Amino acid sequence: MSRTTDLQKNLFGGTTSNARQFGMISTLVAIVLLFQIWTDGLTLTSGNLIAVVSQYSYILILAIGMLMVIVAGHIDLSVGSVAAFTGIVVAKAMQEYDLPWPLGILLGLFVGAAIGAWQGFWVAYVGVPAFIVTLAGMLLFRGGNQYIGNADTVLVPGGFREIGAGFLPEVGPDTGYNNLTLLLGVAGCAGVVWREWKARQTRREMRAGTAPLWVTGIRIAVMIGVIVFATLRFAGGRIGTSLPISGIILIVLVLAYSHYTRNTVGGRHIYAVGGNARAAELSGVKLKRVNFLVMTNMSVLAALAGMIFVARSSASGPQDGLSWELDAIAAVFIGGAAVSGGLGTVSGSIVGGLVMALLNNGLQLEGVGSDMVQIIKGLVLLLAVAFDVHNKSQGRFSVIGTLTRPFRQGDASAATPPAAPNSDADKAGIAG
Image (tube, rainbow, N blue to C red; front, side, top):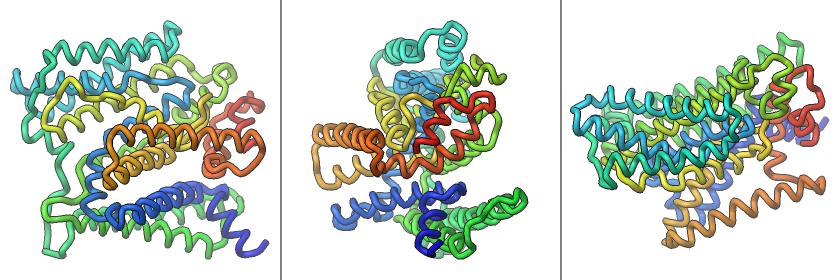
């Protein structure tokens, strides 16, 4: 095998988990560079990157939960209304009852969990399709938001605003950068090296093939390069700004949910249910519990996203959450999830969300009106997925298929129960 073939196999589409991450990062970098050229260098300025994370973090949080819902074979149309309802409940509680803002956050998470349990009950135990349940929820909780808030805006206290509008504080010596952001970047670089070393060690113990050491070195160098560049951008903003607190929350959620969906029994059960629910149930997966938990989890994340948006806006209003569900669903599908369920990853959904965010941001930087932005985003989503589906059906090159092939080989096959080797998830993994 030539060095070029070896590099392509292990760096862009091999079977290791790190190759999967690198493929998605490469796609995102290409999109960023496209807008960097189009906007004459404005896209990668510190101020713009900080603004993108601050403005779209709540959509990316929704995409994490929506990924699990779609992988399980469902859809949730209520997330925007749930976010708005939670925001007004928390804002009212803090304004009228002097509830401390930390307790307000806990109240919001509890409200989200209660709503999720309500919707999960109808989906999992009554058997009503999630599309109908969440469509009803979209109407119900949108009306609840306007009823509780009397269609007015409700201000929130300063401490609460930090989760949506706050940044890492300035500490330590004057280095010209935000020191805490620099420390996070160093931790990220160390995490990449440790994970690569751990992955190679694990594969050696399993007597499985490992990528050549020089390929691993290139992969580490590229990933560290991306982290260093992003760290310097976020740490080098104007005084008082750095990595947003909402960005920290997003990073923690991405790491936690990536681990859960890829490395735990509960996460594999979600993929098994989405791939073939009947086979999964016959293999011992508790189907009702899985469906209940993914719906509950989605509403909890929607509540968190709603609170972050309200904190950034300094007030809760009747127009909060409009069309959020559409952006979250688009992010998941652009990120490579299958409409029929069983396929998709957290990192892929985050990349899909960033694609939509950077598309929206780049068009705004060019002065494109909001009406045309919506038209272009809709066309890009439709054409990208339609073109990719057509290519896969014809056996030709598929962008999404190529990028998600390692995910399907790893996550989908691992999640499929042994008793159902011919399940839909297995067939998709083989076809990819």
